[in-house]
Length: 109
Length: 276
Image (cartoon, rainbow over all chains, first blue to last red; front, side):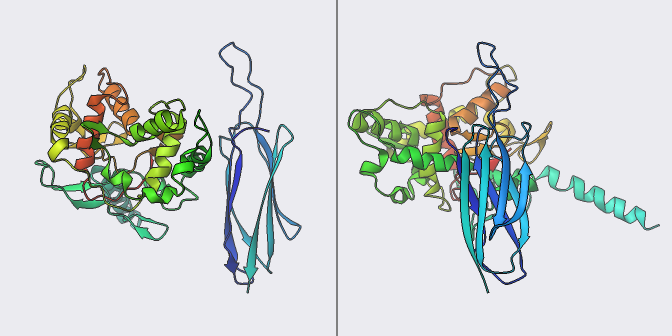
């Protein structure tokens, strides 16, 4: 597992049914591209977050493939319509096999 | 016929803000920040002081409005981890003695200050704790660990007005700092004041000169994507004028830090700010 990885998510706590809400996510990750070399001239192996998924009540919202050109600490901001109360689930997949998760509940009135 | 007036308007809009600070107001998560205030009486050549935030582009300004969008908070989170991490022979962390980092509200505003005849910055206070009370290694002045913790401690004072003591014991240090501020150095033979007092609001090639205020430090800079200490910023300025920079933590930079802090009297602390 890469060091210093921390997912964070911002979702409103409350919304009205049918509202468009803004979701922001950021994961601290060094996103080593695999193109750089160390002091001895050896290639530093690629180590990036390669996929990001957001679900709402087990329904998929967004599924993103990330490539090595994406810079450190990838940030996503997107909008979603919430029909009912429930839970957002966010998952990040690391090259080294680690999976980072975050979840946020929202109350819809 | 309708195109012409629009073009003229656009040109006016483009040239206007480039030659002065803009008029935006800074509100971070519901708290209003003072980014403009009458200059303290010891400043002879400036009437109004402005936070560096006022000189940045709209996109850069927006990053500071929300703590989630502010990239510096990645490092503040790391600072919390360092704060709680036990290190050194005494088996202590910062948090062992200072249970609430919130207790440091107001500290940033009064630093640097004189203690026992010496001028101390926040970096000195942290390293004193590390070497004397924790039995741990001192951190380098601008290391990522140091700036993360100075950022975390500084954040507790966000919104409070800058207010350093410049009389009494501090007077000789302040005089030294003022002398340095107005002394021309380097191959380009420039002083701090040439840019930040005589020409703030003007473009220096692609960069918009600010007054060089230090109320937002440590500051996240887009150019290097990390937190930058005050002294590291001084070094950057000195290299730009082709001068040999003083060392971080040197008596010269500490005196300059005190003098600059006094020039920011009354501006809100924005730690951790976002700049280009």
